Image (cartoon, rainbow, N blue to C red; front, top):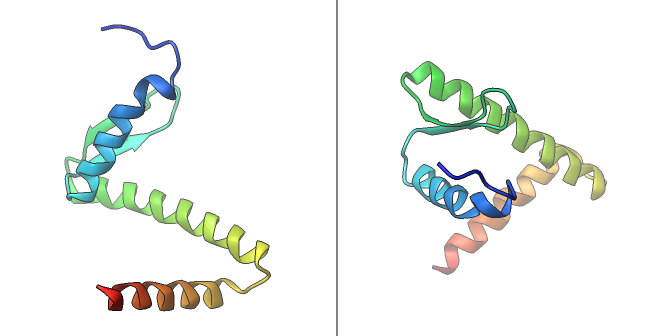
Length: 92
């Protein structure tokens, strides 16, 4: 084990790899906690659902920020995003 000198730059490859594996459906969870942070495989559906709930909460917080910046209601923004996704999938 070698310690990293820069937590962000030295772990970028690992984070990209983990992200790709998650997109493929591997049940890898993560935590940014300074005490028990890191990656692990979800052992149960409950554990995976809890992790997904955290991700959903974080995503909604960011969407609320975007809605505020654009001076839109969140449902209006979500509807607009949905329309944009449908338009992009029609191209393929």
